[in-house]
Image (cartoon, rainbow, N blue to C red; front, side, top):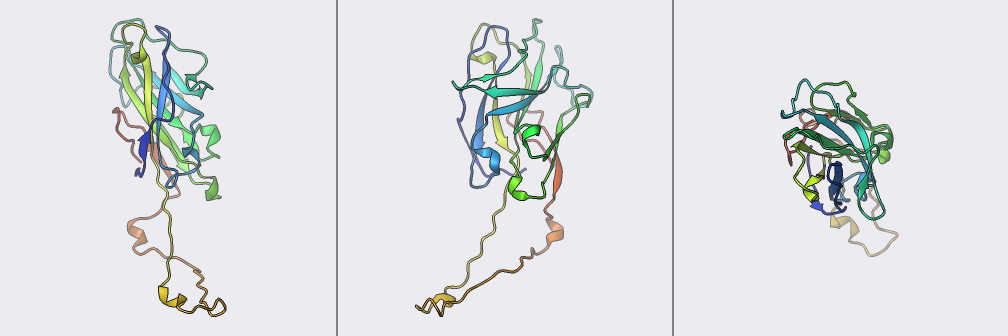
Length: 224
């Protein structure tokens, strides 16, 4: 994916009880280059993988801890979900989290998630709707191989910076000033564009669908 956005703090983090897992999120955005999702994130989905004392395995593990768990924003800027999950009690046990928005149920049929029995890194298949004005922007992030921090503090919050993983291309036309030389409105030239052709389209086709694979490294982007 290509990014044309900067990150800003759009949502608050919250303190958690000593053993509960809770979430905080920031959203990187630029509404001029993105789809309809970019203004406010009211909820997002999370996959989570429990790997005991091991790091995340990209080929064999399934989302055994959370699958498309809905996390909802609250009026006071925190995030909640149900049922609440808790950190493993064994020292060094790890959980990896994969977050995305908007939810598959709110993507106008554009998003299709890998199944809850699919092994390895999760994916999202994105398909453009027939009405492109209904297209939404995919944002995503990961928090890999996290363990319970000591004590009750904000380090226990799983934090995401949801990054834009799609780009929107805008095309504008500007005619030569020569056609506007006359002062008379009646004599002004009217220009109508009837078609647009991209040169060398075979070298850079615009796809109507694609499969997004989450990153397995914190702060890194996924791949298409």
